[in-house]
Length: 212
Image 1 (tube, helix red, strand yellow):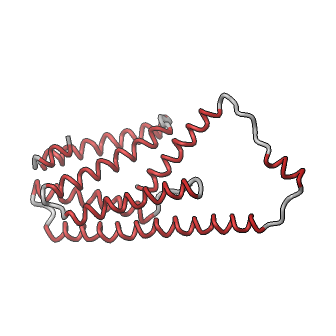
Image 2 (cartoon, one colour; image 1 turned 90 degrees about the vertical axis):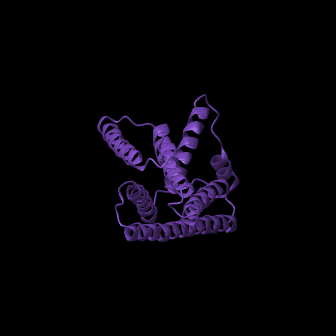
């Protein structure tokens, strides 16, 4: 209903819904940590849902003319570049094995605060316009910095992998007996498909974490 209410310009109702959502999300996080109610699927779906909601808010606010399309397009482009880069790295070089950087976390916080400020200004004429513009500038800056930061991270990781492969290729061959022992593969068991599914979920979780 958030996107629908924004398009209907029911900004006061949107602020109320934001407050309820923030409260329930905080309670959910507390209970999950307190009683260990977590799962790999939940760790993947929860940040993905938050990211999709944030993108939907940006798009709807731009459709209403209160957020420039240039800023929304930059936010979308940043997420697409990071997701495509992580997927490309996974396919060409191996597991991403990454965590959200400080620049990424700061970017997410600035985006949330900016959206809240835009909706509050439309509903209650507060904060002042100059504060909203300043927050928009911070979103623009942090989005660019975060996107460049992730690009450099993937490039450096790829260079390290390529260098390691080159060193392995240049290394002298191992004795035949040692080679046969190292290349021996375990037999396929009934638990291997389950383990493979778990690895896929973990990689998707890392990919979503990188985007956030």
